[in-house]
Image (tube, rainbow, N blue to C red; front, side):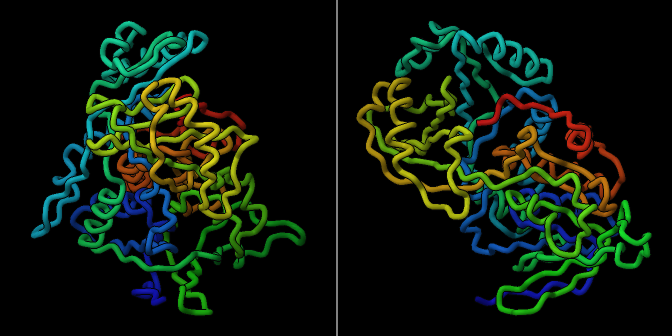
Length: 429
């Protein structure tokens, strides 16, 4: 297939990964450089059809209900951004952007053993400015009469800035705006680097402790050759393949340590029809079991799924779907929570990738400890879409200003990986 435009021979910043996080970084770089408008930014995406892209295969949720302050703050930033999206991403002489936001809120249910932890998390969310209500089983039954609350001790319900939207529209809006601001893009895969380590003469048998990336090698889809692009900064926004990217040829082994603990994890999404199911008041419900569902339109259609246990993790080498997982594992849990779902009719399914951080299931943002001009923006473990506006701005601030200005996300940096101190997030779905 044709590769589209070839990359320029040099770029100030090469963003590896053209999902919503990568395009957000590119957009904010151009916004923050201000009137100079001299920064040459290149976004490299290996899947120009986005047929396997995490962004467009997600269920499009946004919520404030996290257990880590940084994640709550990113959600609040992103919610404000999405509310005013046309001020940020509107392009002159093009139609206004409609991300089809459905403000139905998230509802987390807790069993008696998890009730205290959920209540403590809600207290933190409120301290961070999120509007979240705690609901007793009686209150839940009153508001959502279709729900079986038998084993529920408490629920937390987001009152604002929560719901779902169309991921493809947001990705395209970031991309169109960034291109209108002068961002370059190309279809290809970064498969290698040239670093300053090649210029150094360390003692025999040793490696330099730090280095800079001088060139990225881009493999074009219609060519057997690599296109070298000289660069000043590289941003790794490669999502589920961010860890793999740092194993690419040209990086001395010592500069790859510790490895970036981000892997592709396959997650199924199932759709079904149930004319007697929850109506317009249906929230994005997270069950005590980890199963989830939300309304999909207004005609009795729903989306849902559940993350498998570690022992059940499916092979991520392709995006095939095990429909038996829905029949055997997910459906019984849904029907227990929503009795009308006993008679649901499956409609279809798909699979997408989480850029899963096996260390603590949180994004890794900021500079690499050994590659001096490499920045990371990956590992969000399923919440990259909703945090993309905030994460993109944060990384762009580091590149342009040398520091965080909007949100202090230093704790999400690489240091915790080196020091072995995970930042646990309880709200990973």
